[in-house]
Image (tube, rainbow, N blue to C red; front, side):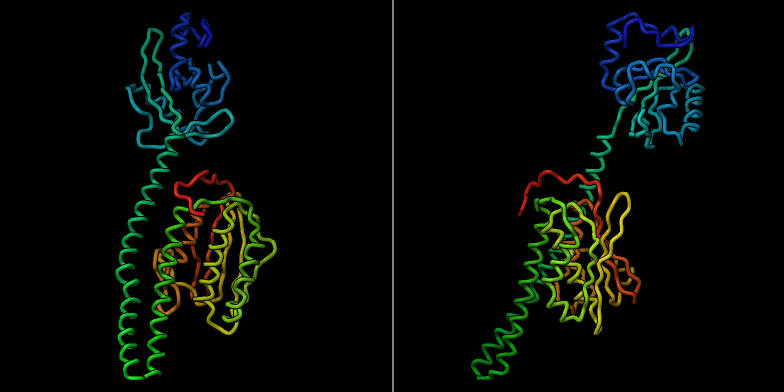
Length: 388
């Protein structure tokens, strides 16, 4: 503020004239926005930080209504609050317990925290407001909330992991140990038919343990991976998956329909391949149940995100299982092959890409597994324990 600037527009505002250069320097050096308003809501004084925060030029706010800094939809209510403050002035935080927003000159909004102080002078009553832009604090709060949710999820997964280690991993070991004893007896007795049956059961148990250990390692890597982000043509990517799975598709009498017009998204090609492989294999495992099945790739989008769906013609999934199936080691049918880790991996990878995964299904009309790609997402520049 220039020394000698007239900061009011009436005789009643003479109190805010200042020829004191030091005073102006001190006010402008305050890190918070400072503003002085009269009973009519006219801005009489503001410091440089206030002008910078709201995007105004020097002196441009002087003489304007305070409500120019308030979102349009709450201006009428704000006038009532302002008048109420002057009727009962006291030092206070404005809107305690509520999210307050200020509006910049360019129309953008920001979260703010406001402290009010009444000021009584010979010229009348005024209010001094201290304004803080808390955008970064809000971002930090959101990060902390997400971190808390992640810790809670990790704790739940740890409980499930302990159960799996003690039960699912133990089961193949018990089976193998039992049939190794049978093998010894069959060898000693020369029962070679029984010997082959015991060998097959041991082999199956070992395969089950191998799959479970492999999936657990894959899952552990998803939380520590370094993403190599680049544009991905989803039509080409899923087309390659179709080629790789052609034998399984033929065996399950299933047609995989991949449209040519799928969009390009940003992401890690290797991880996104893992996502769609898991979803398509999941469809083959649980939904390919007739002599003629289809799995179709769907696409829709809006201003904020791109949605890709994997739709099957299977029996569908009851609503009570829609969230549960994405949890660790959760399976709808324990008779089917698999460990119940695939959909958890899908969910984690999409989370790393700023998106999510969910299912829509109304039995018996099949199910559609959706994944979302935000159009505007800032990928982390580094990951502490990156595994390529």
